[in-house]
Image 1 (cartoon, rainbow, N blue to C red):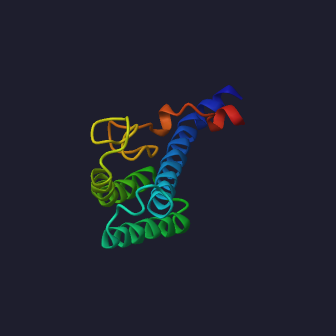
Image 2 (cartoon, helix red, strand yellow):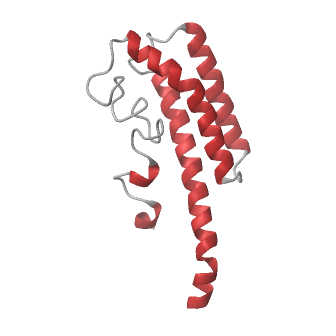
Image 3 (cartoon, one colour):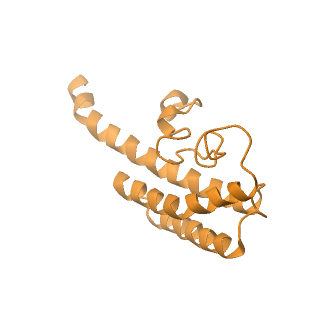
Length: 138
C-alpha cells in the first residue's frame, strides 16, 4: 500500500500544480473582469482599453471553459498573455486615479491591482495564500 502511494505521489503533485495554475488564471481573469466593470477604476480606464481588456478576458474565460485538461505550462502561458494586456492598462488607470492608497510602488496594494498571482514578485500567489488549501479542506 505504501509503495502504491509512493508510485502515485509524483503524479498527484503534477495534477495539484496543474489545478493550482488553472485556479490562479481563472481567479485573475474574474478579478480583472470585476475591476473593469464594478471597481473604482471603471471610470478611469479609456473606452478602447476597456474594450481590449474585456475582449482578452472573455477570450481567456472561454479558453478556460474549453480547455479543462490543459497543462500547467499552458495555463501559465495564458496568464502571462492576460497580464501583458492587463498590467499596462491597470497601471495607467491607477496613474490617472492618482495612485491607490498604500501598497507597493506604483500604487498597487499587494502587487498588480491586488490580484492573486499579480505581477511576478508582487502580490500574493496561490502558494502563499493564507486561506485554506484543498488538502486542508479534504
